[in-house]
Image 1 (spheres, rainbow, N blue to C red):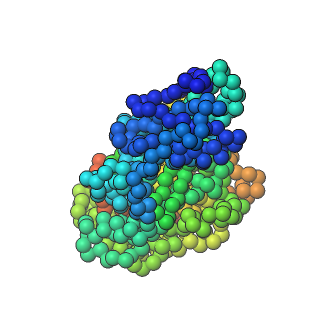
Image 2 (image 1 turned 135 degrees about the horizontal axis):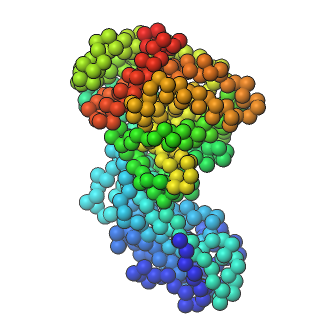
Image 3 (image 1 turned 120 degrees about the vertical axis):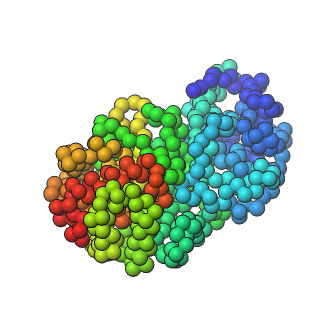
Length: 516
């Protein structure tokens, strides 16, 4: 969306308030920084924080002496991100080198604003105070207008026209610190199961959850990774103030159907067609190929900030405390919903699963840890790969995958298995279907690897065994938590059937249920 705007002495862009001039320096970037105070209005939140109107003055007209300057109300910046922080400075940073900020306004259409499991940390507890001082966590959508850099340079004569471009931006903010997050996660379990021992590593996956996506995106620039993600415009990880921010393109403008990103429950997991599943498999293969195998893992660990965001969660699940906690969680789920387990699948199947939690958990994760040491089958995995965190593009059969907060090192089959059990109907997971998905995923990843990387590719039999191992892993460290929190949810019922079908399909494999 664009509009032709004359750069003249009378040029003005208004949105219900008086406009403010912006001067031009020889360096546009320097001009943006020097004029930050100049473009600040009285209070951009006085009219429900809709907009910031800015006039582009003629180049000889503006001077610092004539620019309106109003100081905003001071707030304690150490207390996190506040509503008032949606200001000129932020949107100047978001526009960045693309050009000069002209105008921004919030799109009042509601955005799903729960930031996953962290959405209850530092929420709007002080909404009775001045709106600008309220802590903010979640997502907002804005229209941001800017004068592109190349157009700015070409419009040196006042009679010429320059195109102003407008982009829709979704800004996601997370608040808090690691300790607050872990305390919150722990409280969710203790609330349902008071006997749950505190201080366990059951929330190992939460390590780095707050800052991971804001940091890893600055490290990974490979097109095979960035092409399957929403376009990122700006990231900020401010650990001192305790907030993390992402600005990205609006998924609803590029997705084939409205998205429900950031839904923190299992309730939004729509099933997909087999054709769409192949598009998602292609996207998974694309990002996994970047860091696959010995060479890829060396690249992954070489990133400047890798030590701050790269984790191997599976190692935590070898610990006795974690094993005991997972076993207790599974028992609670089985006892709370017997109709989904013993009555549906029989006492023998439930006893096999109990034995898996009792005796098989340590061997499964120790084996995964040993494979990690070898590196050749490992890569960067999403770890939450389902239709809750993915959508199809409007153009063509291409998928977009987002919400990388749980990304870690792992076997590539982790993501394929989670996608299958989370996103397909049981009728789409027959033994024949699963065999087809195993072969297709193996071929898709292999085709995207370099010649050197292909030496690390497993045989199709080894790949099948990794699918079976990844199914056990999904049961032990993902499925068990869905069962604990959402056993009666219709979507979990579908997931439960899919898991049971995979366990049956793989029962005679090297890593079949009852063999670990």
